[in-house]
Length: 378
Ligand SMILES: *Cc1c(COP(=O)(O)O)cnc(C)c1O
Image 1 (cartoon, rainbow, N blue to C red):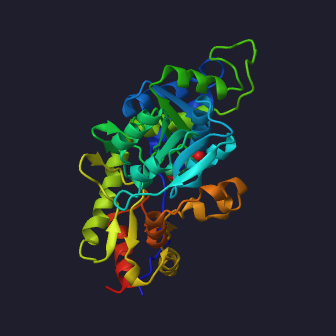
Image 2 (cartoon, rainbow, N blue to C red):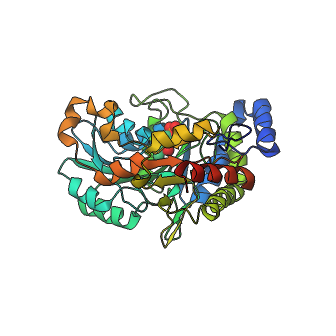
Image 3 (cartoon, rainbow, N blue to C red):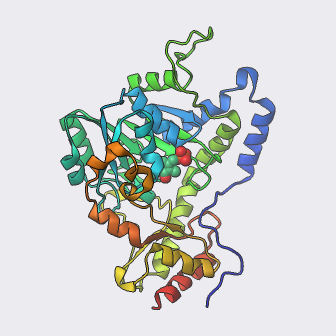
């Protein structure tokens, strides 16, 4: 049996002297009048990269989604359409603001929310759609935009997993009314923990700036709070780290694509597996290389993970349908809103994420691929 000599982790960052240098400088100097200097530089560079007017640095992406919903006034009695298969952080903030998540199915090719399922879920109570660019794949943004415009809905793009991906020549995060990003340690660009809210909308930006600082309008020096808000700020130390990372973003994305390419080449002759898609007109930044094994192999995701674990290789399960998890099945008001999402259920059962961090080399990718072939016995 193949066994990696050292544990191959599933994710991990790429840290250079530049990050260390900027954080060291921030530790010494980002105080007093300079306390927001690194945040400003990080936000400006980030907005320029994504191609949007505003970027606001936050403690995490969950906060960005919470603020987007709160800024748009989504609240009790409202419904928000979300993909059934995504990380729970995409949906938890819907519950924070007292609204009800309505689950839509995902597509077989991109694994992202299916516009037909979204259209079918719209009711007079619908206020927003959250589309998620899953594992780097792009959702069908032109269709989602059409639906949002027809029904006057807020369109939120959860691009937490898709920094650097593109749709019709536009960068992930720039396709909704607001875009949100995560800089968790496993993500394409990291600050340890962190997030970003982006938008071109002056009003939403103004609301987010106020709500994220305990209801202080931007520039308030007198502590005269105009409403009860939240406290969602990124520290200068994290922003310094993030600035170094965004200055290296082209190199980061290129490496992610290189890792996917190693896998794709190595696995090209294996029948009955599906890897991340890159449909015409899109670019995938391949946050996590993901493989779906045909059910005929008789191994679900947990069996696959166990087999990799025996070989000293760390993997992750494809996200499970949220509508199937106790977090949502146990919520009383949601039981009336549990549609069937058959595509998501099948894909989510047989998919795993392979090691995709920046530590991966052509050699370690080769070990993971040999292990997969051995596990599937082909
Ligand atoms: C990581 C992630 C988030 C949440 O990010 P945090 O920074 O941990 O709050 C949200 N949505 C998706 C799709 C994610 O993968």
